[in-house]
Image (cartoon, rainbow, N blue to C red):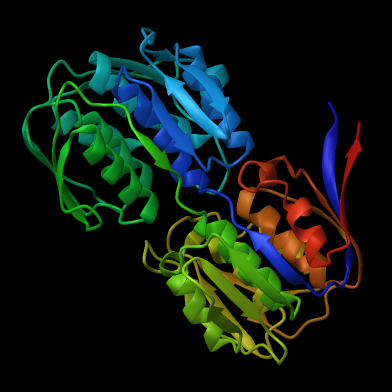
Length: 421
């Protein structure tokens, strides 16, 4: 099997314009939403990613017809009859568990293999299953599959024990074809969740509290098709914002929703980075002074995103002083640290906190990507390191970033994709 790597010759200073793609974490559930209707659905601004291919493969395996016309994905589910999403398809990513909710809503029965994805700690689906049970579902685990039946949604209240993005989406979708009110509390409020809820409204569901941590949904059996555009990827935008800062560059990001990156913008500005809004969807990020140290703590939206933690750790190695990073979402999300230390970073781990001493001179080295966001942090470190950095196992990176090297090269990066057997 051929393996691909990114080879970076540093240091680089990034200058120019970059276009932000559609959000992976919105596109995936929007694709799954189509299972709730037998009418065609039209989805534009879908990023070209491995995870999108994987979700398309899962949906196709259960009968969805998918085509692309004028860069718009057309999904037609009227021929969907299967209720089993098999392991060979589901194992590739955790987001595949989201087919459970809409399959239950559509057919009253679903069988889905327990999902795979990034190895960044335990991410159980118990919250999803408890929500389904509250609605009246019967759940059993058999041969590594979740088997669920839900003849009819009953009126209920669901209090999530902890904030869960995919759990909130799954519960919304499961309740969307019932005729009884389901009240969801302690919901995730991420923009991706909001887009799912708004789309369900356009399909005909009644939802109160969209965008808040308490939503009440009352569904209907005859949900309509939809046509919508995927929101911008706030994590991709944040990654390129950090890329501009770490290289002391000057980068204009187009196609951004500035309010979605407020927490990151705040921390970058504390470090001395200049961030200017140039138009409704354009941010200009520039830096020409010493980076100041800051402390960050990950938190559910609108707090500092755990998906930006690894990239920010790379940036903090270049801050002039000591910074701390506290990870509160996942218990095993520091796997990038050992690779950054190999490049010369001074980072110490104590439980869920990192202590980062900067400014350290990073040196190019062969490094191994362990998950999606860790991959991005190593690319960022390579951009500022002296000499050659080779980031291996970039199939993780391709799950969440559209050909990152093709966006970095026009900005002035010396980076190439190489294939080895």
